[in-house]
Amino acid sequence: MTIQRMDNVAIVVDDLDAAIAFFTELGLELEPGGRAVIEGEFADQTVGLDGIRSEIAMMRTPDGHGRLELTKYLHPEASAPSPAVLPPNTLGLHRIMFAVDDLDDTLARLRPHGAEPLREVANYEDVYRLCYLRGPAGITVALAEQVG
Image (cartoon, one colour):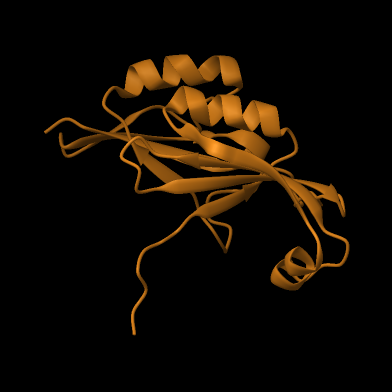
C-alpha cells in the first residue's frame, strides 16, 4: 500500500480574506464551493480539539494538482507562535515553494499584499532565481523561477 498523492497543505491564518487575496494574486484559484465553515464532532475528532468552528478556503494551483487549505479558527481562537515571526531554521514545517514564470513580476504583484523578500533574490548556478518572503500569518513562501 502506498499513498496516492499529497492532497493539500493547510495554513492557519488570522485574516482569511487577505490570505485568499494573497494566494489568488500568486496565481492559485479558489475551488468552486471551496469556502466553508467546518464544525461538529468529525472536526473535533480530526483536529483533536473540542468545539471546533473554523472557516476554510480551498485553493488550487493552476495545474490542478496542488491544493492549499487556508483555515481561520473561529473557536477555539488560534494561538500565535512565539516569537511571532519564526526564523527559517525553526524545527517543523519550513516553507511552501511555488514555481513562477516571472519572479520580478510576481514579487511586484504580491508587495501590495504585504509580501517582502527576507533578503534579495538569489541566483542558483544560473538555473534558478529564488527568494523567500513572508506571506499570510508570517509563513515563509518561497518563489523559484527557472532561468537556465
